[in-house]
Length: 275
Ligand code: RUB
Image (tube, rainbow, N blue to C red; front, side):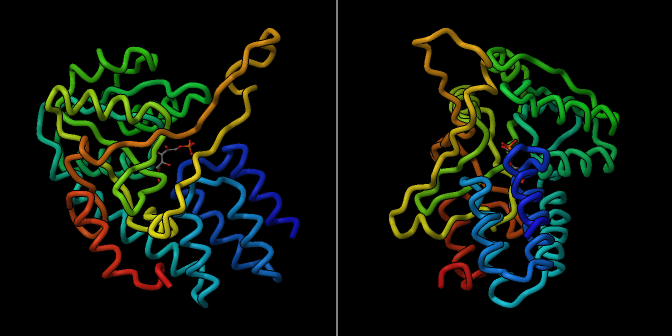
């Protein structure tokens, strides 16, 4: 169980960060565990808003291997990269938020196709995942402009497209992603800038069909302010809920679809999720 506890701790502390990386790490750890049911419970609890991890765990408990999970994630990423890159045109300015390996992979593919574009991204307080995005893009030699979170509107006004990742998608079509994504999506809709969520379809959460709401992770107040004065209560929700009305489409391994069509496709293709 030592390895399981270590991986769960790394996921909780965000040493392992981003929904897909979390699912990969959990799948690899679970496969090696002797008591799979107990290990699954510990891993699943490490971050509550991660159906991608829970679906990967379920897939393994159903008798599949971690390699099959990784194979699915890799193949999906390749397809999403192609579909997503097709949305990027020369000279575009593209907004993103937080640190999504899926969005970065799309941008990498567009760069490989010799497209020229600039990315605008925000810091993503309190843990600055936006810096990880900016670093990754700089390494790929993709031009990037970096802003504080409260400058998101100004950044977005420079842009032609908003791409973001997903932690969870509910049966009613709400998309859960890093705090602040909801504000940028709503503004993008107001300025008629296309909004695409980029994700593999295992981020769909089947429990939401039963009316159970997606749990939004509340993180430690210390991430925001270590020694606030008495009487100040720090609020630190990790994720925001994006209304499907603001989303042009979901770019997944299944193709590019409006949110509700995406959900029907998931139900058709991955029936094991719903048993
Ligand atoms: C990360 C985040 C990412 C999604 C998708 O939040 O919001 O956009 O997890 O990532 P946190 P990916 O830093 O709290 O994990 O596309 O890599 O699955």
